[in-house]
Image (cartoon, rainbow, N blue to C red; front, top):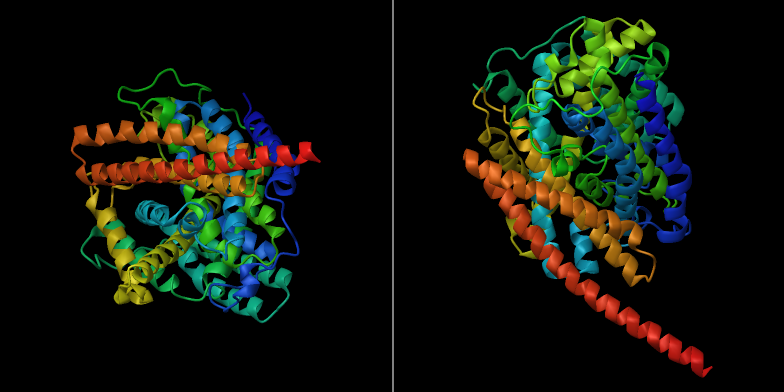
Length: 571
């Protein structure tokens, strides 16, 4: 079967979601008001609250939420077959991720750009906020630990990506300064992207590696330390100086990369060599239900997106009408990345090299991961466009590294916010300090990155952390949808469009968490047992608090309807 079928199915669904479903949600459910004064204008401080052009904000938001997850997740999940992955990516993006990301951005915008944790206090109660923030902190710790190992691995496997990945930092700073000075956005974008691709060309011909064992942790471990030093510094800079322009330029690069990849599919029309449903699973393979729904998180639904939507993007939203463009379209953009990943790892590379797909995907845990996307995507571009494979491979490796890097920038900033919020709530003065809060966040992430290991080298535990990240991510997504649903109930608007996906993903995520909890207990991975159990317990407590509020709201609404009925009949 030609891979064009996968592309047409997914993109047709995304078009339906954008032009029909998101418009319905915007007009009938969230009821966006273009005259509402957003927090970005009310609290404009030039650091965190900055009214931003919606295209720049979309680029910043998109790359912050994308990271490497919509690549790594689908590249792993296709082991069960390409069809389950395709269905979940397509329908998950339309009915789950889009509504979730859009809703978190809108609800935060309506509550002074509060983070989803702080927002839970306004919607549910103080105890819920305290519990919610624990889940968010743990998720951010998992995200940062996983992404640091992914970046480190790619820099070691693809040393040609090192120079352009780090060269993107000064490019982004220059772009940020020029945008701040109101220089023409199109001109800045064209020049910035051109310079970025020039560095990719240089990198494709020049491999780079660290000069020796700097921290005594081997290549991967050394890169992890350097990445957290960078992320700690970047997370404390004004958003307009590095985070926002870097995300924007990376977003432009991704759009170009996606166009090149998708058009390469149209030109080459590679055959899909992977099975639609894999019946030849290796012993010990996790069950597709419920594990599929936590393996592919970003690219179908991700709680991390709600943190970004409410933590940084809502502070930069210039007009409430932009929430649909930034939130829903950002989710579809990530779904598009997951979709092309499915194509890249199910045939193009293996057909070109004459290798059977089963030989590459020998088991659930031994697939090529994001490296398969880079190598398979490069082969696809080479077949379709005739671009040298070395350049294509470097371009895609840089794409993965930059996306994961921007997620680390945003994630560590958000984790710092949480530590500082705890300092304010519990009146612990040192925690309010941004430097101390950042050091605490980095310390916890490094503890996890090096504390979970497969026994090969320091910092090799990314694949082991991934399932806990996926399950925690989806539990947080369900809790975010629950908060949005309760807010809609308070406004007396239809809430089924957020509550139904919440119930489904909560069931799957809890099921998966319990499955992995048993597996970690049996294999003696105690740090993961503690993390998984903590997330489950806290999530149950949040749900109980929320259920109590929902019960009160239903009774109040019912009493109000009866009172309206009595008044109407008396008139």
